[in-house]
Length: 538
Ligand code: ADP
Ligand code: MG
Image (tube, rainbow, N blue to C red; front, side, top):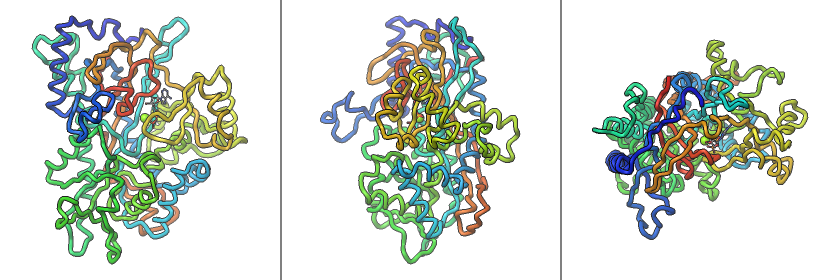
């Protein structure tokens, strides 16, 4: 058993104790927006055709033990990670090489890239970008043959999200829920839990602060005559995770900043860029109030990350329309592209095997070597499968195709949103089932090893009205806000200027998603996981 896991945690509850906790959990969660619209598997659509019902979001009954050192390190690194991705997004030439390698097998990235090229040709009118990022990690705790941990637990990065990073607000609330349950009179929570072990998690005010700073940085209206400014949150139709968004928009609204939800597919119906205005302000006319147009300061994408969200060419036209506007994008097309798995693999490639300089040192020239090593220590081994003559791709192919080595890996396409990966022993047959020239659309990543089965964290998950108990695996996400000025794509087209100038950069709270041991994926919205909080163990 790893030292940070206590086999007697969480306590076994009597039926009365469980009922007491659940009663409080169900009531507190609805009273405080720790909720989702129920899925059709829980409440059939015909029972709630207008989507009026809410239910508790999938949550754990107890906070899950998490090594404090790993938690602190993930939070400490976030500012450097923000800076890293601001720099990547600002280096068009570096991204171009990556995009050109996959463009013929990845229509989605190809279309995003062509939007960037079109807007670049016309000239960008907004050189500020806002990143609302989330860096996801799992605790790597490999086990020796005697089932003992073979090294202290460390964190390894699962992925870095540059678009639509969700669950920040529900994670703030679940931290408060667990604190509330801990403080109940005669609580069944163990008395050994100290308040200092339940870290505060102010994600809601911090994400709101990031958006507010971007809104202020936009400056005065560019419209003639000037218009009031607003933030737009671009959303998917029939969003079930609505309260996660609402907690944020509500906070921003309380700061007297107008913020509106706009379904991504209706952008062209409700926004315009006046052709007579070279500053290209994006004008939003709320359908419920056509006489009060607004100018959009910040476009916050909670949609637009998956190919299925672009069902026809008008949605691509809309994306192009948004990108060429003066609104600050969260994220810009280049920032969205920076989040593809191929970029993460390029960063992780040991530079000793390539003739190129180390991208980390290139992108973070002012970061100390000890901090660079700490970032590098969070990378899993990752391999390309292309081009054939590269030593790392040769190694990647050998590892992926061999049924003895494949179980230690996951194969990832350049997609977001969960449910896209191929795991372990399925990899060789999957690769053989697709044409070889498609392989360059995937990267191979070594699997992070949670504590061995039977030795891991135990918890109980409340989902769709039922409690499930068992061994769980946590995925820690750390949020970050970063605002930067992109020098090379603005009016100053100097080819050499490829570093962004950071205007604001801070860590913005955390998310712990917890899934049952048996599930490969951990997405809460995708139906695999639950929202949790950390019980820090020294
Ligand atoms: P997506 O962009 O679809 O969220 P991820 O890279 O986050 O893709 O992978 C989805 C899920 O797969 C993760 O939440 C995690 O549960 C699992 N996963 C991904 N990479 C690894 C890895 N290297 N080791 C173990 N599990 C992984
Ligand atoms: Mg993910």
